[in-house]
Length: 205
Ligand SMILES: Nc1ncnc2c1ncn2[C@@H]1O[C@H](COP(=O)(O)OP(=O)(O)OP(=O)(O)O)[C@@H](O)[C@H]1O
Image 1 (cartoon, rainbow, N blue to C red):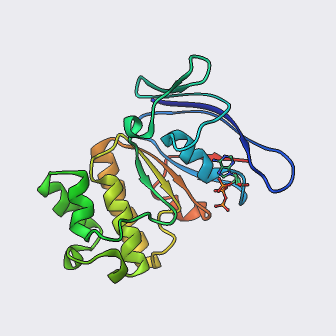
Image 2 (cartoon, helix red, strand yellow; image 1 turned 45 degrees about the vertical axis):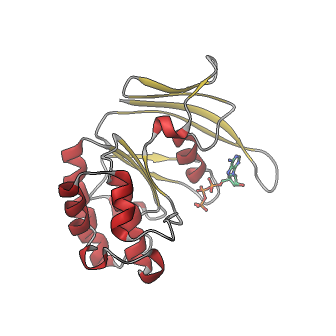
Image 3 (cartoon, rainbow, N blue to C red; image 1 turned 120 degrees about the horizontal axis):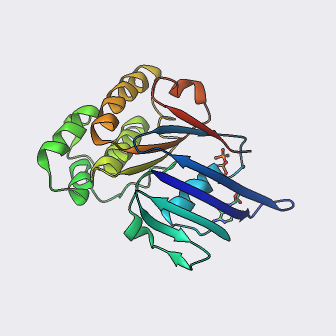
């Protein structure tokens, strides 16, 4: 189970905006997160991962307290280590596809399964600049899955994929998430396209 209660002031251009979320997600649930532009969806994911802190809040993931502002507990990102698919991918420019995955895991069987899922086997020796936008985005997804995280945070993870690749990948991910029992939070601008995959939704207003 993942329990999240946060209150965070956003650096809004005009006025004061507060991101406020109080939710409990069962383990293994897949949640789509949506809401107006600028409401704080990306900031919400970054707060869970520990890249930024809220003024008030408590985050408990599978029995471990990641954050408790009252108790002055805030685990650093490297101790939380959820899988994270960044909106801009954040790939390593000097690493090939295979090196991105080997950096996160030594499990070659798992790496091969991921490469197949992302249709990236022909490109294992390519660095990001020699991949298309869609291939880069798929690599970002595979890298986030490489260490089989219990919690996966995805920020607009399918935005660069054509409809056919998107549908195929979503179907494969559904099976893979179920196998891992991973809880997945997916920020999307297009909630309908995730109907097949997600089991819950969270609207941030
Ligand atoms: N670390 C931070 N602390 C406080 N405010 C932040 C932080 N990072 C971003 N913000 C502010 O939070 C607001 C929301 O940004 P964010 O990117 O989270 O929105 P979003 O809902 O993901 O938007 P979009 O749908 O357009 O991607 C912006 O006004 C931004 O300036």
